[in-house]
Length: 454
Ligand code: ZN
Image (spheres, helix red, strand yellow):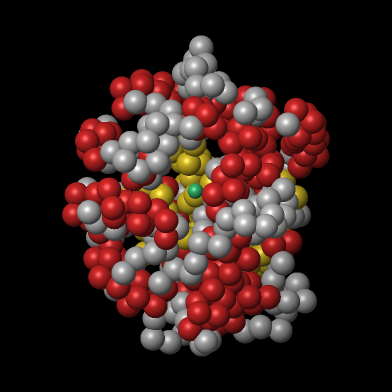
């Protein structure tokens, strides 16, 4: 049993004072307001529902800072991808696990209780499967176990190197599976997930329309089994034109016309949509998986926030390339991308109200939906995905209750997080992950070896 006493807690009807939270088996079983702490309670300043980070490729964290060098005529998303492929020529299972552990730890310290790992590196360099076809998924499971983060594992179907069924390029061979081999992999992953904590989920992720074809996509959806379905879509203008010329429709338009898109789906990026696509997609109940820092880093372009919110669209936040893991910076980058485009302030809130509160509370709900987690709010019967922040911090100490989440989203450093529970597992205490030193030491060794081998 876990017992937490919070000076303030953000409950479903707003801020409440002196709240005691009882957690049994990872689930919030009791909330008591206007009460006093009891000896043995973990005492915190302000308790929030923790966010689920809905989109991560953890291994890409090891490339952070290596792709910001301009080469005349060659700086683009696609040259970034070339470096990623060189990286993948060397990456070993041990290194993948070490990198994922650091990434998951950093996510928890930033206030994320769970992660959707969109996992597409499956095989040896060259494309031969490991003896255990799920070897690299097992390494993600190990990293999740080490850190205690809540995991929604999303094995990726990646069959083609580009639109119109182009063969995989050399750098993509580690990703490749037919639908049959993907089914075999998925079975192994689902079996192994049974040994993981009860909040672990396994979904599926057709990588993108360009990495599959219509017949294979239809087939793979039959084995999704009501679990989360994630897909990259409309991230770059070139992807939109490639898909349009191949399939006769823009990517989001094609999906809406040809796939049963609903609330089980999470469409990652969805950056380049027409107004009609935006409205139609919002009305399906699918989550838009927004990755503001990565989208800014890769020069993807801004999301159509006003159109999405006007249509009642749901969204969550992902750290994608993990070039920088910062929950507060994701929220403010999302809003600032809108302000810069529209020459306006306070864009990401429908009608009126606090932008920080709208972004935070909706990203909590949307992220939980996308990962199939019964979380995103502090309520009895929900997973204890909880984060605590320090209201005495200089950034927040002068703010009223209605301004706290604006202070968090726009002004605070992530070090304002004092505690983090993933399904009741208390992994961050006094601002540090409980295994920070050990995880960091293994990471240093792994990335040194990796870079030396390149
Ligand atoms: Zn991605």
